[in-house]
Length: 336
View (cartoon, rainbow, N blue to C red):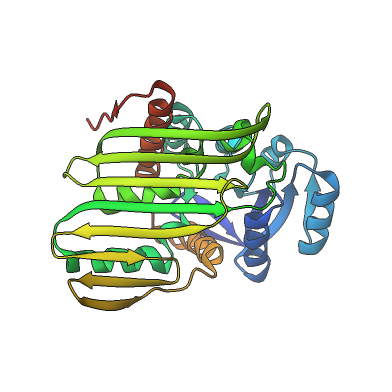
């Protein structure tokens, strides 16, 4: 193995990787890692021993008994966290304390102060901490950003993502304690807004849950209104579960010179009677692209596509939405 100056100290090629989790994101990460000569998937820790064993057999990795044991291993350079939202912050902090570079699926933590500690610790340890935000990598977001100048001064935006589920199973994404407040667990909805429009002045949020038993729900609905410091008013509507008979995914932006309407597959510019189609790039391969960029960053110092500060800011806005929902009051954001 060859030692390479990565900008984070010295690492080895291939980069030795451990994954926490065995779900969809972990599978896509693993597929990329085993196909890339720059990385070696060494170990995996999962919640279910049988699923973890099967996952490791598929990808030629060693099954570790717990994430705590995994982050303590001396034969790992990088830990990728792809498990339930509740555990993200604790695993990231433990991995950094054990001198590991870290990639974590959003959100970094369900708790703002824990997220701040993790970012500070990464800087102190001079380790990479990358929070995945593939919503910024996809064709939809790039098309929106490129099209914004066409509609002049933006004054209102609405982003609706509702997922109809015929029979909501008892899985962690429908569990209060593991998923977190819906707009924190689904922080990408708000991160799109803050990336496009900047700082938020106030947040007002209403939330409804259809609880089935303690800690589980069959459906949820969040409606958050964001007032940006530049005057833009934005509305994020997030819902999922069996209460909804129809799914919807539509991003609408109103400007003084036109309107933009986007779905994940297509876009349209509307100016009076004129309608112009806007091409939207693919959503496929984004986890692979994110993983490739992480390896490039570690080995060559190539900058990544998202700053931890922007992810942390979106988390603060999402937490303000949670507090607004609980208090039924507007919550101001401290932008000092």
